[in-house]
Image (cartoon, rainbow, N blue to C red; front, side, top):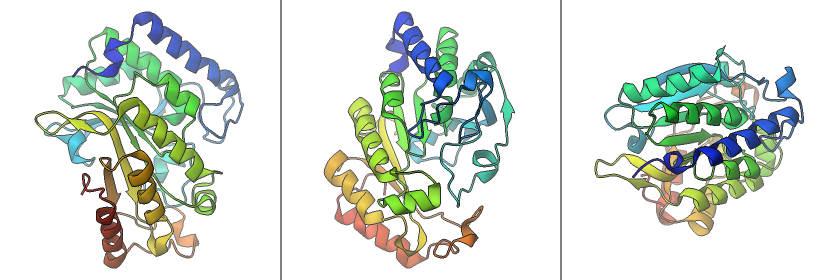
Length: 298
């Protein structure tokens, strides 16, 4: 199966990139809609400017098995984020903006370099605030022979309009579903309406790519892969998250229920988040997952 973006005409690719770049002049790439002019150096809540800022580019072997295979997922870690999660394990990148500004041409070269190293896919990590630049780089790389699947690896707080520009471009969506409570989203990630936006995004992503599909070697080629990080003291609202997936998205969804929460960044300042999860909390989450029939990611 060829990547989706291969089939897009040059004219349509140019239209998509132009439409996305237009949003930078009064930035509305994500639901926060800061309306700053990033083409003039203004920065919104994500602290991102006009040039893409990249923290690292590398084959990554810590992602989900369908992405990693034998040669790794070709990750491009983007600096900054439209979320402000108080427990982010990558806070040096997402909150402190560690990285280097690069040109779109250099970014295209990075993608081609990952393909040459044998990576199974190009994995944009935290891409929401840099979608126009990433899309432009993608099509430049396509013109030079890029032909591996594209992964959109997001915190799950995206604009529906931005996602629609990506229809027929992204092969694999990998969003987080962090909370089932608006209160927790506001308190711990500093954004309003997280569950409403997140659920709407999941439905749009699933509409575009469907359930996760893998090739004969078990490598993902297209579809939706969902992550849910279990927080201590039930703060992630795991049952609500998983029930929505099972009842509103698909029981055939690939869901990775994750147990690696640790009180990184500022989490120790928040009662309830100031400890790792325990084995009982994680086992309860797995039991909910099984009871709802969401077994693909287990």
